[in-house]
Image: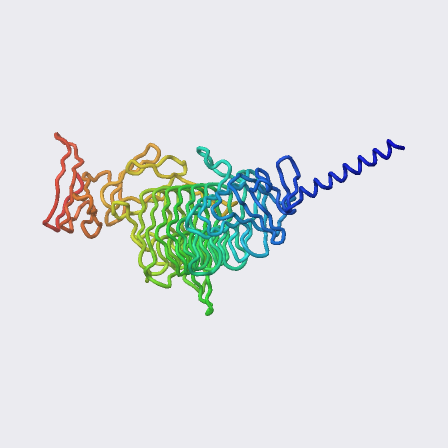
Length: 531
């Protein structure tokens, strides 16, 4: 009997101890469920950090998880279900968060917010996971400062030659109601700021509501957006850009150097039912931009259209409410398919009353498709301004058929061959062509595979220059020649129209070396280009 009573006493003591341990484990809403994983409030499973060490805290009353240190942590939803909760990153904390099937759908506010912090926050999408971050009256992922950085990446973005796929992990970040970007600013207040947004990898869908997919909400000023990798679908709503600003806001710079990107804007309808549009990449309706810089990646940009409005450009500035609001668009590499809608061009500004944008193209395959009802410009080629290179030379488009996907060089510089672009995350289109912009002035050498062709621009357009035995350029390289103003070529005759110096080189090899000479002052002059 004594032994039985002793056993009962020991069992009761063990149960009491276990109860005390469980009480300790769930204090503050945290329950240890494994060697390095904590169940937080029945909402999140967190590994890599602990509440006891002060890495985070949890407010059960408000279902709010606050990240307090830079300790790398991994977060997923309990049972991989959608949770009504939020995550806030304390100001000044360089948080490092990995998403591991994290699905947040709050009744109000941002799913993840770094507030107006100037810290550097990194969000990594874990391989093979699907993550959903919804904002209500706020961005899905909220950043309310131009300072600091928000970096969104996959686990392999820094590996050489890495190309993202679905295996990199999926992130859907959006604002479903009210005012907010998918990733970026929230609300509808003057003085709202965002910027320092860097996307390096992952398969990402970003959708705004009265906000850009990536960038601003209404009235917000955006300093910079930077994309170097990933597969991205960005959609703006109610006049906002897919990537850039929202209505009555502004965007400083958009810098794209890599990734596969599809971007769409959407119409804004006023009280009279008239529709206005933002650009897919750039400025929203009644917004402004400073610069759009594309140096890599494959980009498809398209805008919404409605019979009640005029449409908008795909890259540049949407419909205007003032005229002095545009900057410069630079394309130096990559593949760009820009589709204008309605009466709008593809690249530049949407309204003829707006200040023209400077369009500079130094490389890449660029296809600017004018809207179905726009007036096609023979010289602007689907752009609202005449494109030039960084030397100020006017450009002309050469469309190169390349079904064999052979290498292409133009004047010694490599250009993209045929390519595949995405119209959204899951659908792609193969184009067996390259669209190359070349200087109108002088000769252009184009090599496709092992075949080289020399081109020269004439009154009839681009012509094969095989039989033209002269080359020419501006004597002063800082004063580029302008076709139709300084010279023109009619048939085989070079006509000098101004007193700007033109240096001509003969390409005929006789008993002596090729010679050069300069034509200046006396004009008009004519010079036979053929032998």
